[in-house]
Length: 120
Image 1 (cartoon, rainbow, N blue to C red):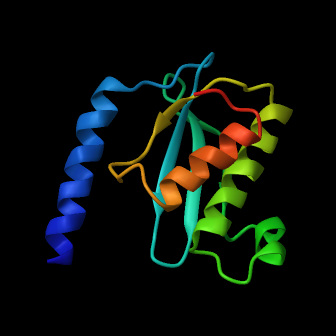
Image 2 (cartoon, rainbow, N blue to C red; image 1 turned 60 degrees about the vertical axis):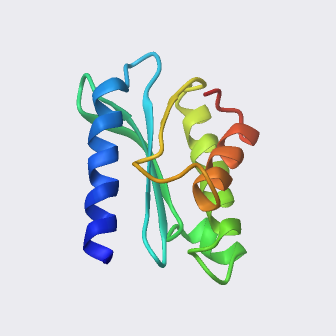
Image 3 (cartoon, rainbow, N blue to C red; image 1 turned 45 degrees about the vertical axis):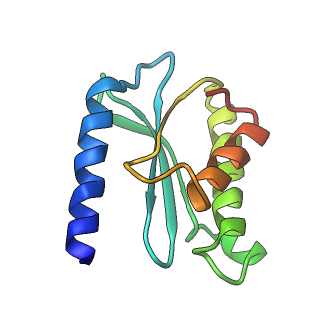
């Protein structure tokens, strides 16, 4: 059962990734969630480089939250990612939800990034 769900998510992600492309002007924000943690990266697909990354394992987020796989932690990851992106003068991005539904933790990360100043 779990394998089928994960394969379906990967299939959705590949399908969406065909249409979404991160450029130097407007890079791609990629989300990955596990049961215990939450990860996000801003990637320039043309050069193949990760510009900014944040996760629920970072010390800044761990000190605020006791759990790192919940909605509060995802929101904090979004805010931290936006803060780091603003330092590198990135203000506009393309959102790639990684095949996940736009609900719960994924939605919280997006809202945190928007509050931090990123434009989708």
